[in-house]
Length: 408
Image (cartoon, rainbow, N blue to C red):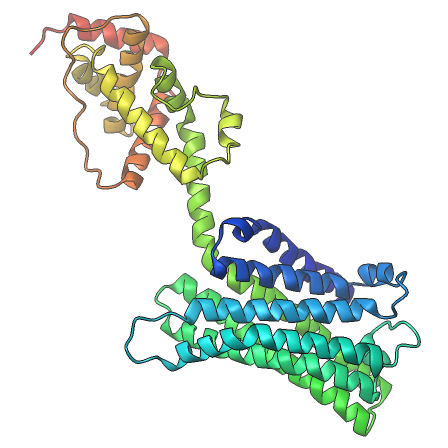
């Protein structure tokens, strides 16, 4: 069960780290440090799994996985301090708030502290730690040994310092957060840090109690097992907490991508009828949806602009009475106003395909209560829904009726 939880936590953090890889190249210090947290802790967790530890046993250095795990963990903790300091280290207030001052002090201390910890751990690992034989569980196998206690204490004291500082900052940020989603994420992050403080304090107490007066093997094993479970839950909560605020961005990307998928038939027909309207000729739907050269929301804005441009060009082909005929045809439709525009577009495209250009363009489509791009996207999605059900025969019939109607 514990091994499964270890692999699960490592996998979750790895997935999140891979997802945030673009931040390394395109992100600012805030996003790069967040990626460093995920990547560092993911590597740390993988180095704790039985499979990776077994692979590293082939290296001549005994317990190398332990040293690597702690060194990478120190780098991840430094990234966490940088992330927290970047998040809360800016202010325009004349009097520096306490949490801002703490963030700035943390930012100055983090690199130096991590370097000192890494050097000390490396020195102690190769000098005072008894490594005559490989360890199955480093803490349990070195119970009561002062060398291992010193080595672990260096890492644990750095960990508890970072976790306490981060927990303090995230608890304060949770109280100041304005949105429910952000509060939820900050709460999980703060709780995970205080869990880390408790975990580390228990570990420190355990290793030194064992040096002074060794506990029974059963007691040691139970404490180690339960603290290990606590450790994995701590990482999962941290990953979830830092990901929760990003769900809004993920939801926005999904909404834009889904809108592209739905609008594709209408956009394709319009830009195909008037080549040059779009930046490039429309490709098949799957290929269009798989393009990642531009964000989905930017592409959606372009598609909306393309559709609007072609609608304006269609006025040169739509008979003056076509809109009135289209509105009559859409009266029985569940959503009549977008349906009327869909009928008008379909019939006007038929006229354009047949080359029925007018000497004078017909009147523009009625204005709609659209205040932003999002509302325009929603409107066009309703138009597309009706457009998809209109046949070429229906469009031709509307054209014939419009041409027979006397101009008003």
